Length: 447
Image (cartoon, rainbow, N blue to C red; front, top):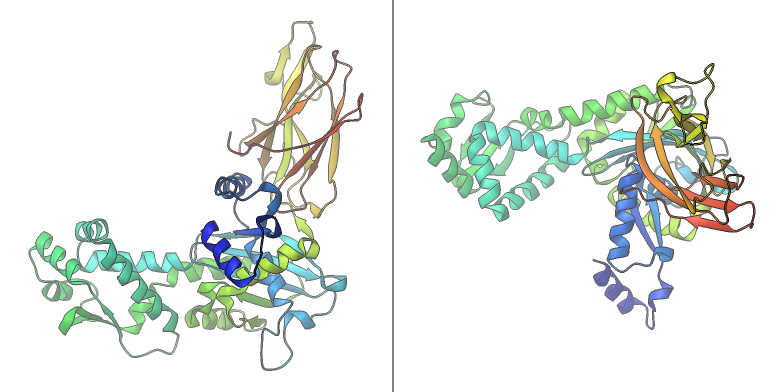
């Protein structure tokens, strides 16, 4: 893919060199740090230099795109006309994930996140899954599995046809929806069940709502087609409703729908009906909003000036044991006779903290335990609990580690560790106090 895009760029711009290109890779906002790190490593393995690569969160990219265009042709309701202080919710409905962020317009057209990114795996593929379950019921579960395994080309063609049909269905559709059942699936159904598909259909719960016409064309009542959206849309509606009731989202007047799934008429109409008091905006080319916004973000990554931490982040340290503060189960006696408390969660940022992009949110000073240490491994932990005590607490997970170099000898050496969380990725910086040496370190999220 990287080579193909490079070739396309060279055809458009003569004399383009690899160093002239900066790559922007978009990822869902609900992904954790390990998933984002994996994508970065994959891109680097594909030949993209680390310093030429930026990760962009998909709903942020779409939001930026919509600040640069008139997203609604009638009237003047578009994000670029929002005044400073206006809040809006971004619903990025893609194939796999639903990413939701809430932004506030700041001075000079910059944006800040006012509620941590959230969402779930309720995208367009959830509708596809419901359709496949329907086919499994009217044909046979084993037949459907063999169909997918042995006739992949037919399976993909079937999903492509369904994709077209699901974009067209809306709340007012009353006519039947026609979807061709591949002959290979009909044959497998007969082979396994011993019954022709047209004879089996009347025995299912869809007997009065689905029929099989000549040429293998299935005719579905529109109501059946709409049921495929139920799980996906109910999750989206419930989640958005919950968000709008939070204090952070007070004053939100607009929902901006982007992503390919947002082009579904049924999803649009359902959102407008449920949130009738809000302005629902679907920009032209909603499915391309993330792609086009990523280009803008690549040119101006400082356009998102503030984000909200989804987790509490920190590292595991040891402290001198204090029986008034520490749990005895974490007490450990070292060779020098000192009693220390291990697995202490040293917090850098808490879940819900406002993180200004490019700024150090916190810094802490640490010293080695042993005089001869030449480096210190600092394991990084995360939890949704805003006040964790130990890294062994329930819900706390080790997400990565960073190896800090130490110069000299002795336990009086100190190193200042700074973590920067305001961007799309975590950055760690260490400064040795004795030498003044500053090192920017990579976090290994795939331990």
